[in-house]
Structures are given as C-alpha cells and as structure tokens.
Image (cartoon, rainbow, N blue to C red; front, side, top):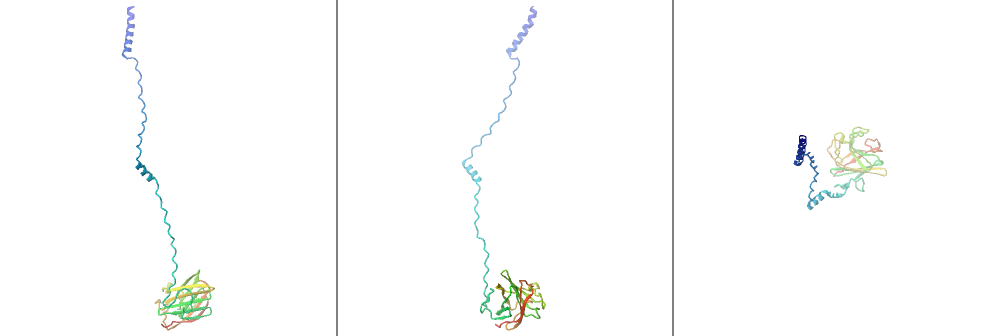
Length: 247
C-alpha cells in the first residue's frame, strides 16, 4: 500500500511547485497598440502684413480706360493757288480772266500767257470729253493734245500726242517715252457743258510737246466727244488758231 501512494504524492508535489513558481501555462502576449494617426501641426497664423500682401496680390489691377482720341479727319483740299498772272485753276471762267477767246460753234476756247506758261480753258456742249490739239502737222498727226473730261465730279486731264492723221492715235506722252507736263488743271461739268482749265509750260523740253514762242501763232484743232472715254470718237471738231502774246 505504501508503495502505490508514493507516485501519486510525487505528482501532486510537482504540480504544486509549478503553480507556485508560475511555470504554468503562459499567458498570451497582448499585441502592441496600433499606431494612431498624428495630426499635422497647425500652421501658424499669418501675420497681418502677410495677409495684406496676399490680398493685394489677389486683387486684380484696375484697368485704365483708353483715352478717347479724336478721329483724324482728312485734310481739306487746298484752295487753288493764284499765279502771278492772276490765273487760278478752278474750272470757272471769270470775266476778264483771259486775254483771248474763240468760239467754234459749240466748242469755246480761252487763253492767255506770260513769259513761261500758257493758261488755257476749253469748253464744249457735251457731258463727254473736250480736247485741243496745238500745232498739228497733218490732220491729227504731230498735235500736242490736251485732252480731258469730268467723271463723277472729278476732272481727268492728259498731256497727249497725235501719232496719225485720224483715229484714236493720240496716246499720253508718258506712254511713248515723254512726260506729263500739265502744271495745274481743274474741271466742272454742269447743265450739259464740260469745262476744263489747264496750265502748261510754253517750252517743257519734252519731245512730245511743241515749244511755243511768244509773238507767234499756231494752228489749233478743237474737238468734243459724247463719252467719258479717252479713245471715244469725236462728235464734233473744228480747226482754229492759237496766238501766243508777246510779253
């Protein structure tokens, strides 16, 4: 009997010792606490001066209204200047303005000269062109032409040259190697009448202009046409004579 109780006593003793020394079943270890999100440090409040600067930057600059400028107005055409001879290119035949005149049944011519220029007016009963040809050789050939008309209220005048006896063979001097030597001109069209005034040199030096000598007379051709066209056929023409007064 004593032999059987000894092992039991030994087992009880060992269990008691384990309990006392804490060698029992180990307790489960606790998991470390999960990290908590840390809040970012609050930004320091901006100073008053910084806030003012930010406010100024955020405020859009005031746009200045563009100054109103006066619209440029076109310059008025200058008044025609009066020459030393008392002549003005204005398309108006004043009483006593010209020293000489001639009427060719519906075509009228006035003229005067000083020692350097010829001042000539020509008028025709037409709403088309008016022309004079100075010192022709044969028919229209060799004539120094002043040809023009008034279209839409604007006078157009050419310094031309007769190249043949008949036809529209009177090109502008500038197209055949010469020069346009009309110094001044003006024109009007009113009540079925076209009137032109021109100033040309007595001697331009152009081979397609005749040198006009004071004290001499030259044959003249006068003509009118029914259209505002440089090459339109004439409706009336007549021969005449031009005398250049001696100074």
